[in-house]
Amino acid sequence: QEQLVESGGALVKPGGSLRLSCAASGFIFSDFYLSWIRQAPGKGLEWVSHISTTGENIYHVDSVSGRFTIFRDNAKNSLYLQMNSLRVEDTAVYYCARYARWEPVDLWGQGTLVTVSS
Amino acid sequence: SSELTQDPAVSVALGQTVRITCQGDSFRHYYGTWYQQRPGQAPILVMYGKNNRPSGIPDRFSGSTSGDTASLTITGTQAEDEADYYCNSRDTSGHHRVFGGGTKLTVL
Image (tube, rainbow over the protein chains, first blue to last red):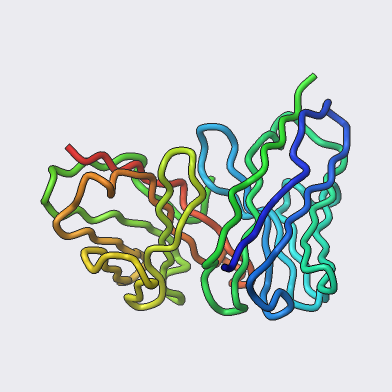
C-alpha cells in the first residue's frame, strides 16, 4: 500500500525551529518528486516547497524562502522540511505529497499540525 | 492573492449538474488539475489533464479547459460530493505549481 506519513508537528514559539519528516512506503521513493503543501486553519492550500528526485532541484515559495529548507534521503525513503525563524503565519497543517515530474500530485499524507504561538 | 481564481462558494441541488471554475493565464498553456477535500481529510485527486479521472473517481466528474478557464463539472451531484474543491496548475513562470483559493460546494 502506497503511503506517506508525516511527523514532527508541534507547538513552537515565534522565532523557533522545527523539522518535519515524511516517511514513504509502498512505492519507489526515488522515482518521484516530493512537495510540502500547507493549509492554515480554515484557509486554502498553499504549495510551499518541492524537491526533484535526486534533490538537485529545489523550490521554496517566497514567503518561506531563506527560512525553510526541503531535503530528502532516498536511502531512508524520507522527506524533510527544516523550518527556522517560524512566524505565527506559518501555523498550518503541513502535508507531504508526491508526484511524477510532469504529472499531478497523486498521493498525500494525512498531514501534521504546526502551531506557532507565544 | 492566488494566480488562480475560484468562486469561494457554489451550491447545487441534489441530482443536478454543477460546474466549478478556475480562472488564470496558466490555463492558456496547461490543463487544470482538481482536488476534492472533505472536512478533516487530506485532499484527493479527482481530475487532471485534458479530462482524466484517477481510478475510483466516479464518472459523474468531468473536466475541461478553454481559454484562461479550467472547469470541473459534476453531473448528477450526490450528497457525498459536498466538499471543498481546489484547482492546481503552474504559476506564471511555468516552473512552479500553485493552487486556487478553493470553492466550497454545498449540496442542497
